[in-house]
Length: 170
Image (cartoon, rainbow, N blue to C red):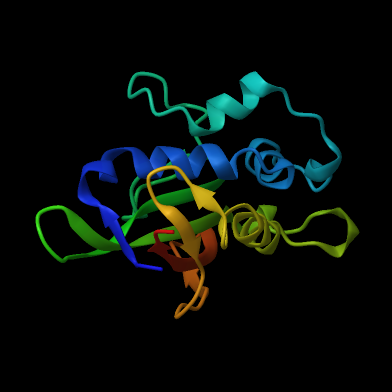
């Protein structure tokens, strides 16, 4: 298996990743609902779509964002997943090795979930279940290897984890 992906697919990959992870029930519920009982809530397909909607004119409910955290001022209590390209290593004009970066950003007051669970680790687990070793259109497989999820203090109100996954075409 190769770690290279076709450079022509680069524009669609983040969207394809977001569509795959938002299908995970726990991820969608943790992003949508700010209460400790988030995992017992019901979420509709329309609510799920709003979480990864990238329409620049309608980002109010978007929780999956295609850029790394950069000290954006987030006023309200919320959770987000940031997806972006952490690195590129072009081999030629057609093939590139890419690492996809993920930031799990959770308001400090929202960490606790019912049943002794924590929102950031539930999100991390959901991302790995949805993506690790799974086929993603335009990528092949995403693999969590040679990487560590690192605790990050994004600002005084938000803490979470950052990690990368590498691409692997099949």
